[in-house]
Image 1 (tube, helix red, strand yellow):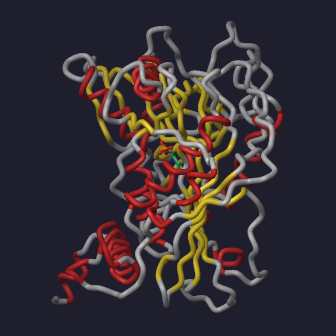
Image 2 (cartoon, rainbow, N blue to C red):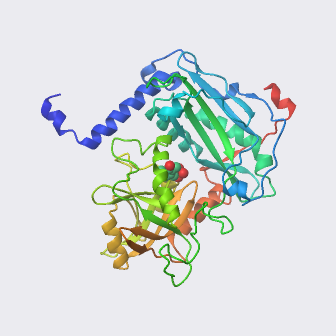
Image 3 (cartoon, helix red, strand yellow):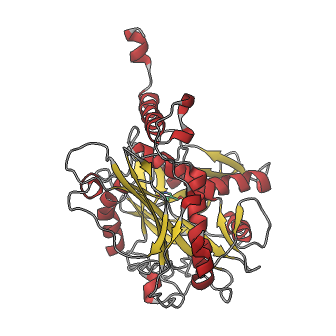
Length: 447
Ligand SMILES: *Cc1c(COP(=O)(O)O)cnc(C)c1O
């Protein structure tokens, strides 16, 4: 390549190519079955069919919905699934074992160098009493991409999905009882570098685990919106009374000295390193009465995400067209949410046309301010597994409160209802994956 060709490579392309090359390299080196160009390592592949079962002899009581244990997200189920990997052997047989503490050396890689990635998903007890996952293959593929970004080993996403389904199948009956249709629990597949060495290298020992936790329903008025939250009161964070109470998140825009993600970084990956450093800003937001940070990027204050959810707005253009808009994925600074993708797909398939243009494009704060001031903003919402679809009622940006409208017939609620119908089986749809439940009775232990 000539020097001029190098110089002409756009910075963003270069960053994503570097990341892409790294991801391919890691997958090739750690996962025989998904090796590129038939390259084989002789390592054991992750194999869900080899799982062993050890029942918990001291099972816990299931907490009441919206009890403190649930709202604090501190209560996990009786079991977890683990599998270890070493650079010499590959993956060991997975085990389903009693939930409990992990043994880690104080100099384990993850504790110093943030070699951790995870997924956030839910399983749902349908109104037809079946248990479903929502588009789980998108989570497992995303976890593969996240693990590669931090040099953790690859695995066939379908095997991870089988392990997730196994935990759900075992815990479902007790923890998401048929007496509670319309409820859900949260799943947290996690991978960490456990190698006991302070050398700053990719870990040669790794632990994969899957836990299931009680999780509050943020869309249920009886649940609080996190410890400090006040999303449903009618006081603005500055103490001015609004005329009528309105549901929705109150967001504090991030300041220029606090950036969540940048091109060439890792904002697109669900890696632990993205979250610890964000807590300073979100804690300030909570103390000031806001629910979340609205993460901005760059000199034009581009809106990227709302907390750990993707950001959407609906506005009328000056030409009078109605658009649903969210930030594009291209720069690698946006986490590609499963909810984001589902909202975009449903909006395009079921609304779209003349009624609603669906647009992925950069949104700058000045554009949002203009839309608010000219009365063109119709609604804004956050979309993600944890908060699901939550309307946004206020954005505080550089000393000003921007009040976000909320109409009863808003698009956010419509999309949310369609998604819920799929999650809870009111609509039969390929995105809702039914899990066959099983009990851990002794006959299962022979498998
Ligand atoms: C997990 C996450 C989301 C939402 O993704 P879903 O797959 O919809 O749950 C959005 N932004 C960030 C930063 C996240 O960590």
